[in-house]
Length: 329
Image (tube, rainbow, N blue to C red; front, side):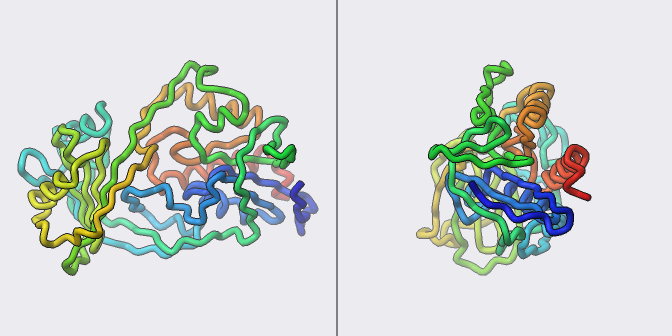
């Protein structure tokens, strides 16, 4: 059993378990490590030291609040956003472009990020380190019952609160429930990501969205300085990326380092939505029965940006403060 130090001010220990060591787990750690006397253990079977290892697609933030939770370098950039539709570039939003893009990526109609085009301010993070210097990392797979984490080797870890950042169906399995209990099916679409480097000097930040409904055409290509990132909802021939770069960006094959081209799959890319009532019911049950709070896009099963999750972590802190007020005395 892990030995935890006492709270130096109140004599009360707040034992916090975080499941998942990605960017959401990192934010949760930063948020709760500031509670005097709190002890945090992060459980992740991969035990990867890079919290962004699973995030291969483009990630830009709309504000700088993340630095309140995560030690990182943050750079402000001007991003030029446009849509390529029927051989033309558009930098002003309209319904047609929004709907065509939504149908291509999600096969449904919803408001997408194409509502803001032209030049926008964004922030890029790098050089990430953990704020919770006393955090214990544990590479483990566990089950949850009796408000304890139970491991394969007949050991257990008690917690006062548990924050889950893993997919909603995964945490249901850990607590002995299933999606069938709620009559819901969890589905998602992988993202195919191709990255390459420019052989010419570049300090621009540009994103072009493509409405072409053909699967072999990427839905988004981004230039971040000397790096190019192309994303699609299915595997595609890299030649289609070259065609898009040439037609939408004016970048030719000769401006690319051919040996730098890599392709990877981000398995859980686009989440298929479920009933909001069921989604909320699952999260409430997890909290009421197991003191498990769901945090992040996978755990809450919503297509959230990283900066949107910061609102959620403050809500969780408020709920914990109400339910476990003795830790804040």
